[in-house]
Length: 388
Image 1 (cartoon, rainbow, N blue to C red):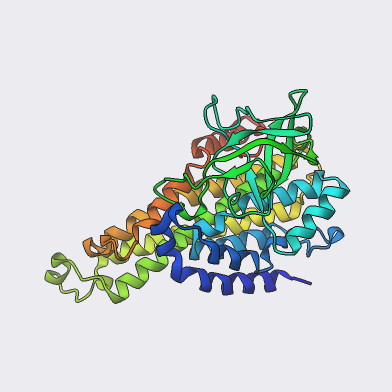
Image 2: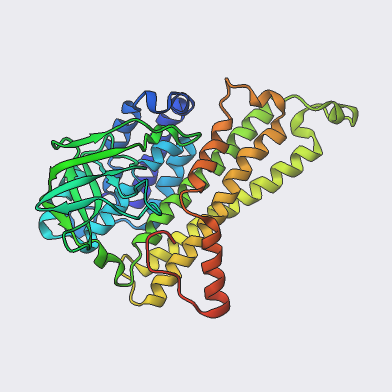
């Protein structure tokens, strides 16, 4: 049986395989599908870590999920983000999936087949203003930000049914009427290739009443946001790691530092101050991530009350907001410490800031702080949806 320790060890081995190619995958963007890296992910056995024991999985929880994701994100945050939606779908199936859906989809996941997502849309008032429909057993619609869908075995697609109720339809990636484009042109997280997916009269047999998931106390959103938090913490750690490496091996001291008697950039007291401050903040982000994962571990996938669900959501919200800020900061501070030469394109060190900036705006951080304050100051529970 796969344990936490084995999963973490596996993540470290996979990260060592992914890291050397991360810069090139960033440069390639959507022009080259990262097939080799994704095959390594799919074949690692990590896709099934959160499948319940009753469904044949190891039943590992948020602590394992967060640490595995952080480790992979420090190597390549784009590849680490690809299964973010996958793990959300596993959680949804575990709580709300029919026996048929769990048996079929979990069997595929345990065999190394990944679940992609088609949740967000363009063109409406907001990303969840859905125009996609399931009617007469057929799925029709257009999705964007479809992380993981391009190379997945299944795509989970949010839609409204004939009664206007939110459902989640699982369709094979290779089904007739399904096309996924590589029109993903952004400044960071390029190798996620989260472009447009189009569904035209796609037959649907596996459908979940998705609306019901958010009509009861839930931790689906908190666990999904925990993965995003781990990605940010991983980016921050990677930027700090690369700053340390560059300062020790490549960076020259500034003229001011030499005049003050310091023979290397790493001996410059101002560099040391900035590095020490940043290192402390990165460690704090990692600690908040671990604390949030521990809280979700205690609550479990099905919280006992709205108050318990709120506790999980707000704990993760704090960790996500802070980690996002630190990741963006780390990607910028790297250059302040390492100097102009670090900005050379051959190093591709700017990918840390671009990845953090792109990923951190996945959902607005200000609303996280607002919901935390509303609860602390006025006992207002956060909204019961998937983005807190």
